[in-house]
Amino acid sequence: MPWDPIRLNSGYSMPSIAYGTWKVGNGQSSIDQVTQALHNGFNHIDTAQAYRNEAEAGTALRETGLSRADVFITTKYSGTNGLDFETSIHNSVANLGVEYVDLYLIHAPRLAVPDIPTAWARMEKLKEAGLARSIGVSNFDKKDLEILIASAKIKPAVNQILLHPYVYRRQRPVLEYAARHGIVIEAYSALIPITHQPGGPVDAPLSEIASRLGVTTDQVLLAWTKAKGAVVVTMSSKKARLQGYLAAGDIELTQEDIDAIDAAGATGECAGAPQ
Image 1: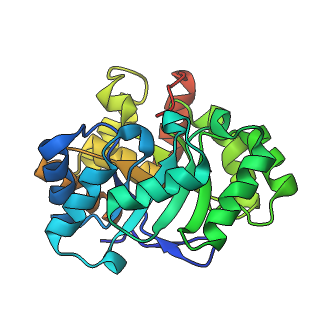
Image 2: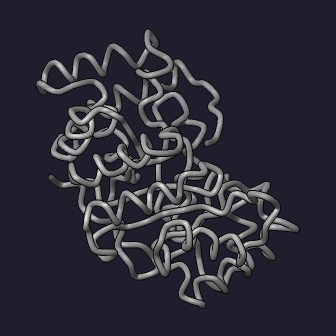
């Protein structure tokens, strides 16, 4: 299925669809859900300090028997317990049961203390120490990225943001800035238009396209996200949906399809809470 790896500016490649652990909870259920995702073909796990399930993700990885090299692991500095960057990443790799993470993100600009340049310099040191192969940010807007780039020795490889049709127009400045600087966009909550805001303007083009192609509306949304050049972060506890998400990589939307979704999204713009 053509969720092809995306080359990062760090020289490493990242799978273009990830299983996110934001809402999988803790304990055995969390382990089971991550294990199911890995068994069904996901090879990118996206977690964070704040989700408090890094250890469960690590247990799932070991239980699948997959080698470390077979799975791309993203986690995030969330400022949990007021710990510094170095202590936090050491805790994260210990919780995950690995020696390094493939991608380490600052979870939000407010966590870049005392300021973005100082925080980013600390992130660069973590990469240089081999604790993270690639480093990036999450929920940064264009202004935040401009501040970061002005002092960075190493450009962020990724900016993970809220992205779906109802926020696309609002997010375009950061998408365009990232593209100019070789920063990959990761999209979370891409399915919000149908999971949390059904009945909106986007429903009509999604349904028409899905009917024409013989696929589901959630698959169309994922294909739209992919068409925007973004890596998808998604999740489900249901095996059939996970398989459908992976199959969505095969869907080719026309430019007319993309334009119709964009136009409908612009008429129903909304705000969204960052994860």
